Length: 150
Image (cartoon, rainbow, N blue to C red; front, top):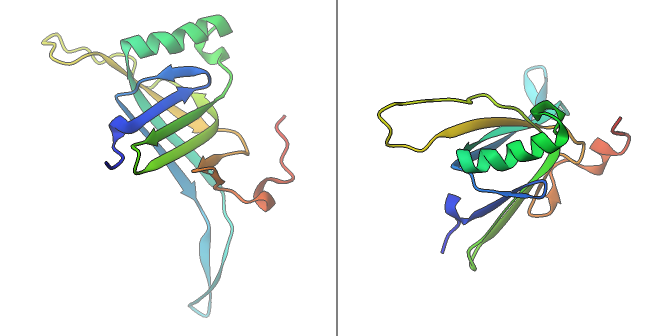
């Protein structure tokens, strides 16, 4: 069997959360350089990772309970998001470190019904640990050796 969206287990910190959808996109601004119009190597650039998840009311409640314990939604400390899928034939693990959670779509009410309520939660990776894919870091040690989290 192949991996599908249904295969993934998702943890936000220590919370097991079920999502309707989730994305994570890496922006890597390395770029080729040219001499006299001819490619001749590359330069490093900034990196970023962001994404969003859509959760139903029951899973939003889990997150809001954690926010309540913290004092408010904005008092939530950045947390790691760990995703894992294993079908027996294939497996995939993606870890996103120090994710700062926001809310972008709190309400989308349709009085006709037919769909369960969903809230969209964008996030940004804030840790120099950045992203690991199947236990392999995206960034090199050279990228992060001199960084210290304040």
